[in-house]
Structures are given as structure tokens and as C-alpha cells.
Image (cartoon, rainbow, N blue to C red; front, side, top):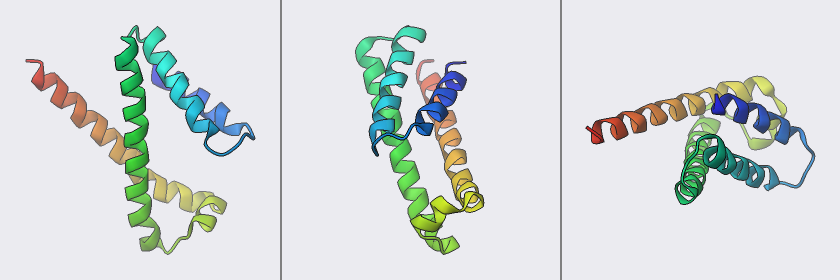
Length: 113
């Protein structure tokens, strides 16, 4: 449930016309607040989790975009202008994020036994 709320908030925050990078800082803060208050998490663990999750997102997006943009012959300007290409190139990123979250969750569950 927290993920759905954060996805909606992320969508709304990205609609604002504020300086580049401020969206990311706001979303990190909102994730931290959600983990601390709604998830009833420890302060320091929530901070580390929110920062690591955004770091993982940046790394996965960088790697995927670096590999997929040359394959499709796309430059960043055309990627932002064409929503169909953005969706096609964005889907592997989403798939990798889900797979990595699933594998990390499995690893943590197996380690706890």
C-alpha cells in the first residue's frame, strides 16, 4: 500500500515545474518519511534504505539506458520527446527493478532462517 501511495505522490511531484534534481530530493525525503512513520521503521535504517533504493534506481537506469539507447539508435533528446520509445526502453528497467527487489527479498528471507 505504501508503494502505491508513493507512486502517486511521485507522479504528482514530477508534474511540478521546479528545478532539475529537486524532484529526486523531495522523493527521497518522502520515501524516508513513509518508511519511518508509515512503516514504523528505525530512523537510521529508514534513511539508509531510502538512500540505497535511490542509488539502486540510478545505477539500474544508467546501465539500462547506456545499453538500450545505442541498440535502438536513440539519443536523449528524442527519448524524452517520443513517449512510445520512452515506454519501450523503460520497460526493461522496470523489469530489472522488480527482479532485483524479488531476489533481495528472497535472499533476506533465506538468510533469516
